[in-house]
Length: 127
Image 1: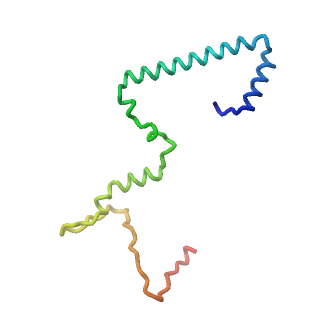
Image 2: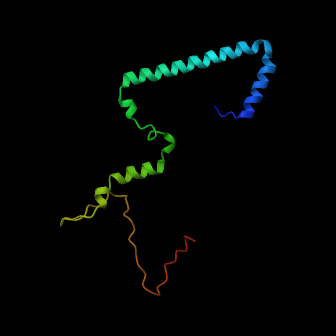
Image 3: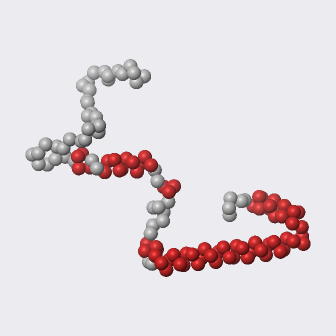
């Protein structure tokens, strides 16, 4: 309820009683109730009008997929960049040479196996 817990609600109610006084409090409470009812009525009317105008497609929309909190910009960019190179990365079954990625795009590094007893390379700049 708007981020207000029970204790905060009680404090706000006591402040309202003290500030408004017992004479004007029922009047303001009834105005607040009318305001809330009017807002609910307007929201329901807008929802029904939207459903009439859009039609049954509105019920088929998966709103959870459109939730902006679920977007990971890194994943979206990675998928967008790799989407174009799916054909490049697939093995070629014909006798034609494999397509070369555009300039500036490095292919995945090849794995080099060390023989038994051989030490791993040392990079002084990396440590």
